[in-house]
Length: 136
Image (tube, rainbow, N blue to C red; front, side, top):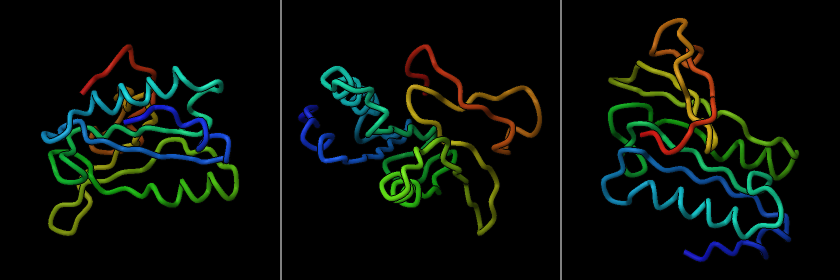
């Protein structure tokens, strides 16, 4: 709950968080508020050491009505070990062993928005764009 991550930041720590927009156990707005509080306390832009990925339609950690399969560990390792700042994270929905939908997970405060072209179930039809505010 403590938003003072200054010691973590000074040591070069990197943090990737995620939260499902449809999480009925923990309100995702609390996680957004926490990240905003960290940003307010940090002397550097918070996205230099912390990224939050909000997952549309996902319940608490998995499940839900949208994508819920994604890998945050590889982007975290690449960020720590190679300095590759994570961008959009590929995510998918798997039903009966088949991928039925893909989406980019975008780092807050951006969100995946349909770009008006292509299949709404394919990641390539979405762009990460800045949102005016929380948008489940």
